[in-house]
Image (cartoon, rainbow, N blue to C red):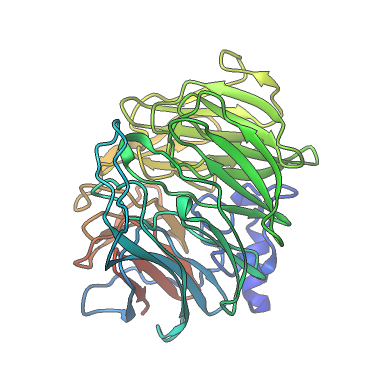
Length: 441
C-alpha cells in the first residue's frame, strides 16, 4: 500500500465507525482478508478505483475456470485470490449414505473433490491448487446451494478453510497443509447443506456450528487447530450465519446470530455474556457493529433488525436498551452493508432496497426496486463512492453514493453469481458457480 492511499484511508477512519481494538492493520486495509471485508461490514477500504461499468466484452481483465462448483465468496491477500470449490467425480461410493427422514434432499452416491485454489489477482493464472479432501457427502444440499459455501479467511500468515462436515483446514499461503481438524457431520435443516465460514482474530479461529441438534460454537488455536473452548448453543438450529468478533471495554467479544437468540461470548473462554431473542428462523445475515452496539437482522418468514448494546449482560430480550430498527424488508440470505452511518439491506432475497440511518433507525429514503436484479443471494458492497448489488443471474446494479443513490450503471455477466463482490485496488472480483472474473478498466 502506498503512503498516499494509507493517509487517505486513515483520514476517513472516523467516518467508518471503527473502534479501538477493531481497526484493521495496514495490510488488512489493502486487502479483503475475510468474509465481508476488512471492517466485516461490506466496505472496501483498499480500493483505489474499482470499475463501475462492464459487460461480457468490456472491462473483463480475465476470467479463470474453477474445478467443480462453489458459492462461497473469495478473499484476497496481496496478489493472491483464494477460492473454494467442490467437484463431483464418477467414483461411486462403496456404501452410499442414507437420507435422514427429515431431509428434503438425497445424499450423493459418488465422491466429491474439495479444492482450494490460489489465483494470481493480476493475471488470472493459478498459483497453486490443493485437494483438501475427497469424500462422499453424508447429506445433499439445496438446489441453489453447493458443497463449497463457506468463505475462507487469512491473517496474512496462514489460510483458514472450511468445508464444513468435511473438515477445517489450515494452509500456508504457499499451499502447504499445516493442520486439519474435523468437527463432525453437521445435520442441517431439511438436508440443505452446510456453509461454515471461520473467523480469524489474532491467534483464535472462531467456528459457529449451528445444526438441527447439538449446535455449538468453538474457538480453535490458529497455529495448531486444537480447541481452546467449545460452548453449547442451546435451542439453536441450522442458521448458516458467520459470527462477528469485536472489542468492547478491552474485551474481545464474539457475536453470533441465531434463530432463537443473538448471543455474545467472551473470546477468551467462550462464556456467554448476553442473549437477545426475537430473530426469525434461518437467521443467516451477519451482525455488524455500529458505535457501541451491534446490529443483527433476519428476514425469513418475518422481518427484524435490532440494535443491541455491546456491554449488555444476561437475557436482554425485553430490555429497553434493545432498539428495533425495522420490522419489514430485512434480508433472508444477504448480509447488510454498513457505510458511513447508513445501513443498506435488501428484503428477503428480492430486489427491494432499504436504507436506514443506523443511529436513529429512521429511513433515509423510501424503499426502492433495484431494477434488473430480481433474486439476490450476494451481500452488497461499498467501494470508492459507489454501492454494488449483484443478482443471482449475473446482473450488478451500481448506485452512486449521493443523496438520491442514483443508478450509475446496470451491468450484466451471463453467469450464476451467489458469492458477494470483492474490491481490491483497481479490481472488482466476481465469483460465479464455476468461474472467477476480474473486472477492471
